[in-house]
Image: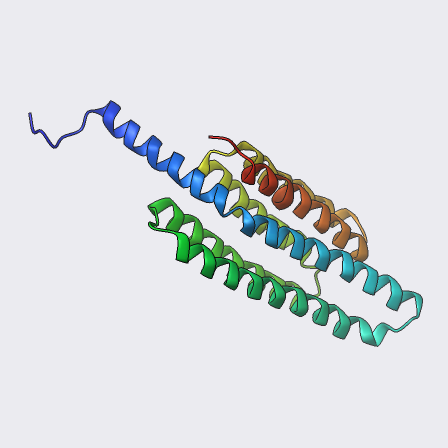
Length: 198
């Protein structure tokens, strides 16, 4: 028998250690879930307030400008904060695992999907939250399943329910549902991931 050939048990142990190491690295980088959880929650709540104020004043022409400005501000702020956070994280990180790369690519594709679904929704006259929450649910659930962290998986599944709920409420209330979805899907699992024990 070849000395380099691994038994099934040895292979399983190597894979389990790789997942455990990734989970530890991901716990350290739970800042991304917390960062985007806070950014998106605040963006939704501020957008809700903007809509209420402008609707009460019957300033309908300003709704589009202020709504887009609100989201551009928060998304740019999120990317700037993430850039500096990742720069610091990469300086301290010695190695990147296959799972790290997989999760990064998954979220890169999800981010592109967020923008495309938002653009298509607005162009067709639909409210984007239901579609965006669906995409967030897919990416979050897969991440939770891959790193074997149940609160993140449950948070991802919660996004699906919130996505459906968006179809039953008024335009303004979809923003509150989106904020609640992000709290359940990103913030709560993010804090649990940050404080997770090995």
